Length: 283
Ligand code: DGL
Image (cartoon, rainbow, N blue to C red; front, side, top):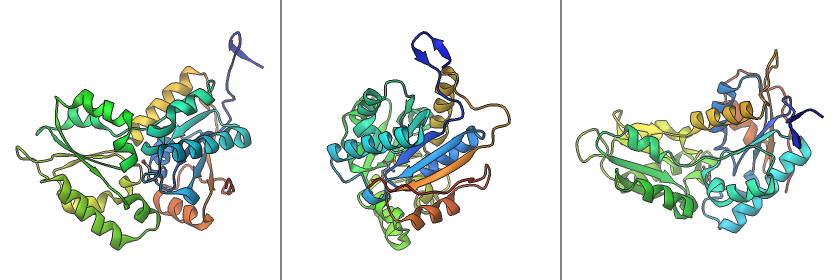
């Protein structure tokens, strides 16, 4: 075994990166990861059998996150874990880091800081799940920025579930309702000029949200920064996959297998190729 420092094993660069979400939303983060790290191998786990997480309790989400991470490490030998879910990050990231001290673990959180930097009117709308918004982590993030912008925060019950089911009618009704709740969008003083997509499902409905906000509003999600942070951690660990490695992807789901395949076909770009498609059955 090679050693970076005595007692610190160097992770196998050819091992895959594990990525998980309550369901399909994490594919938006996976897409950013595959773009930033085209030589890497990925295993994506959609916990579709237990989605949505956002209206469950912290204990449930933490227990599921822990079980999924264990499966990815034990059965797939992952070299890093990306928690591609704001809700699971809020409920479980500390526990996951404690349970896997040698594994680089990257989480996602609503992009409030970039929103403050980007907003001209100082008025920012935040859409996320109820569990994310009620978490201690989110409250701390919000409180640290509360004197720099005015946030209009909207828990979007039912929206991730409707996206999971591809229920367009319900998605449209909820987008209309939640954006009306947020307030008036636009680029004039007093208007919300920035929209934080605080759930990894929401980038997939950006077009539908856009119908209610107009073109001038800036949308922010966290796919690209998460991919950069993952690259940084792998670099630090000496575990980036180099050479002529061709990226590949394995898709796993605790739910109906066709749902994840269909979403991946619809939402992921073709390159690098989806070399392997298999399904896990973590109940
Ligand atoms: N995609 C998830 C997030 O970023 C959660 C959606 C859900 O399962 O409620 O929060």
